[in-house]
Amino acid sequence: MDSEQRKNFRPLWYALFITAGIVIGVSLNGSFNGSRNILFSRSTPSGFNKINDVINYIRQEYVDTINQNQIVDNTITQILQNLDPHSSYIPADELKSVNEPLEGNFEGIGIEFHIQNDTIMVVSTIAGGPSETIGLRPGDRIVEVDGKNVAGIGIKNEDVFKYLRGQEGTKVAIKVKRSGLSKLLDFTIVRGKIPIRSIETAFMASPNTGYVKISRFAANTYEEFMDALNKLKEQSAKNLIIDLRGNPGGYLDAATALANEFLKGKKLIVYTQGKARPRKEYYSNGEGTFENGKLFVLIDEGSASASEILSGALQDWDRAEIIGRRSFGKGLVQEQTLFPDGSAMRLTVARYYTPTGRSIQKPYTDGTLAYDDEVIERYKHGEMINADSTHFNDSLKYKTPGGKIVYGGGGIMPDIFVPIDTTSDNEFSRAVFAFGIVSKFCYDYVDHNRNLLGVYKTLEQYEKNFKTEPKLFSDFIAYAVSNKIRPDEKNIASSKSLISNQLKANIARLLFGNDGYYRITLQEDKVYKIAVELSEQTNADKTVSTRVEKK
Image (tube, rainbow, N blue to C red; front, side, top):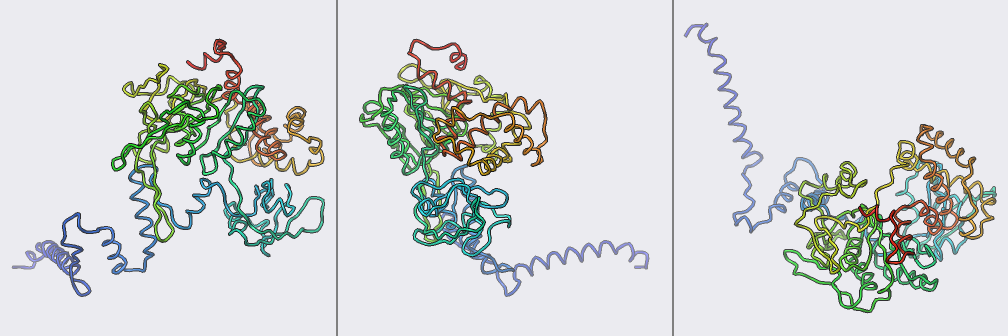
């Protein structure tokens, strides 16, 4: 073979060498470092634990040191997330905080706080809690905790929890800056059990009608509700408005206990059923304390789970009029299982069904992301504005004993639809609320005007006499501008009524707690006003304005 022929064969030789190298590489891979191909198990596919085998093999053979516990946690998380949107894994260090809202208490010093100007400011002290007992006051600024400076360091809410929460009976030493005093005040507070209330507020909405706002269904919700209901009855409440808007749910037992108070005789409240869980039914016992008065339930897209169980049961038995917008659509039952390391798994084991047989759960076949964004899609296709934009399957129609048509397929559709208020929705109003400008301004305003505001001894005095004067509103606009919110005269004008109401309501919260906030903010709430209007009417006296809302 001459030199020219050898030259032409070089590409072929190169190809053969590369191919041989790949083959040799694969062979070496199979026996590298001693040695052997790994056979995890020779048993049948259902007879070995593939996940454990893989994790153990990684732990033993992986090139770098790994955190096996973290890998296990991540694996379980991914498995559960791929089942449905509500099955979940909770690490041990998060379980306590996750359960606190449902258990109805936590351990700490008992304050509501706000981080203002990079300082922890006491908004209020919880009645009977350690901070109130020892003399902490609204407006106090916590600048030092256990000898460590906490002011001006970029502190976050989670840092405050870490510093001030702790086991019942333990002590925490704080230094406080109080307005009007040059020296810091020293307090040593013994941490205690602090209640988390389910009832945000309860008051008489009109001469005959009580109003109760329920924020969650927790272990103590029923007792709180009955206490509020009895007080309203003492004030001559014959009718009742229950506000479940934004209530994400909670314990099933709390929802069924409340439903029992409104239903006559033995009536099905809800039933659950799953592949491995036979049908389980929950009934009223006929011993309710509010079986006859008019009843109105307010819901929206933030009302979920136990909120939907209660509103669905009362709607299906024609016991209450449901007002607002379609609820979230969470009808899956989770069962919590604890692991020895203190972590927990919440696994969906059944579905909730209303008395007529409606499934509350909305579809989730398109994945978790689409499921989470479904409420946003309601905005996009107009459901928040027009009830006719809600897409229901005619095969999921159900009829109540009173002949009313109700729908399954996801959430509870109200009897009286009230569209979301878009009159004040613009770039300026969205910005001042999203960035907390309204609340921050009110904190400063109250802090600098406590003597002036001291003339309002009662909420009734404040509600009647405090006005959002032009100067207060213009000061707020200037404050928004100083916080880099661009002013727009047209948007400011269209949102002035809403912002003025929220300024007065947020100041009321700082002076009189949640009662103050809700009493003021509900004055501009269309859903609430319709419920109050209906509660004071006779059955034959339905106004045209209300009928329009029902279309």
